[in-house]
Image (spheres, rainbow, N blue to C red):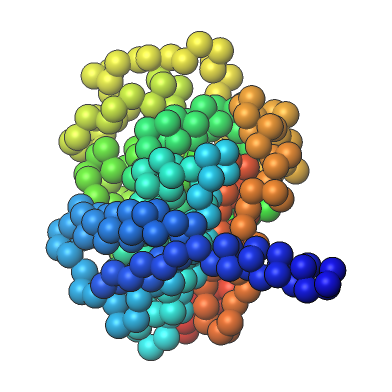
Length: 347
C-alpha cells in the first residue's frame, strides 16, 4: 500500500511537472499552465517577427521544424535561459530553448534575448565573437536588466576584471569569469549601435567574420584606426556615464560635443593593465581574476549563492555540431558550448 501511494505521488509530480503544451508556427511551448504556454508561445512569435524586422529589415521564414521551448515560471525564480541549435552545410536547425524566471522577466528579457540569438544564428550561420552576440542580445532586454549590466560594468572595470579588446574580439568561447563579458559586451554593443544602428552593426560583424580582420572592419564601418583606439574611446564614454551616443562619424564620439557626465566615484575607471610606450601601442591582455562576487554590485553576491538552485539543468549536446548557449542573468551566467571552428561547422 505504501509503495502504491509513493508511486501515485511520484506520478502526480511527474505529470504536474509536464505542465501544458501549446503549438505555434515556430514553437512548441511547455509551461506550467495552458495560459502561460499560450502567452509565451504567442509572444515568442511576435518577438521573432518584430526582432527580425528590427535587425534584418524583414521577417524570417518559418523554421522547417519548430523550436522546442520549455518554460519554468515562478515569481522568485532567477531569470535565465538556454538555447541550442546545430549548423551543418550552411543550414541551422535543431532548435531547443529553455527559459525560466518570473512571468514578467521571461516576457520582457529572457525571451527576447534568446530569440535574438536565433535570429543571429539564421543570419550569420556561424559563430560570432561572444561579446558581439551576447552584447547585442542584451540590448533587447528590459531597461532594468540593462541598468544592472551598466552598474556591474563599473565594478568590473574598477576591480581589474575588464577584458582587453584584443582578447574580447577573439573570443568564440565564454571565459570562466563570464559576467564581465556580458556587461562589457553589452556596453560596447550599445556604444557601436548608437553610432550606426543595427544594420551597420551586422555589416561590421559580417565583415569581421569574413576577413578575420577586425581592425579593418572597424575602420571601414566606424572610423576607428584599431582596437586600441576603440577601447580608449569606449572607456572615455563609460567615464562620462555612458550617455546616449549621438549618431554621426566616429570622430564625433570623443569630441567635446558629448556632455561630460562623470559618474561619482568612477574617476579610476580603467583597465588595470596600462598601455605604455614599452607596449608599442599594442593592446595588453588584461588578466581576469577569479570570480569575486563581493567585488561586484550588491546583488551579484546575493544571486551567486542561489546559482545552482536557480539555473535549470544544463543541456547536453546530442550532436557534435550542436551549440548550447546558457545564461543566468541573476547570477554569473552558466554557459556551455560545443561550438567548433568556423568554416567547418560552428555556432
